[in-house]
Amino acid sequence: MNTTIRKGTLFFYGDQTFARGFSRSGYFNKRESLELEEYGHTLQSLANGLLQPENEEEAQFVRDLESVHASSLYPVALWKKYIAAVEKSKIHHGFAKSSPRNNENFSMSA
Image (cartoon, rainbow, N blue to C red; front, side, top):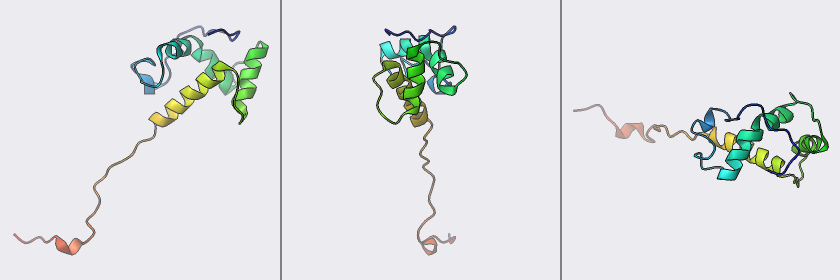
């Protein structure tokens, strides 16, 4: 990634949603997976306010994340894609047995 955003000090593996890695998740291509691993901690810390921007691109990243308009910065698009993948993976559709419509059709006779 051609950016002035700092690389993270550790590899970023996301939350438990991506237990087998970003590249095996089906959400990200190989390049995006590598960039998330390298820059993920910094992007997450900037997004959460735990890390203060040190240069103009990092400040623009924070501003663009808070904006409703589309950003021209690739790291913003990548981080929003990551957030969307995490949120999508946390949506579960339950398929529970439904009770019969007419209880009178079911009798206990043998």
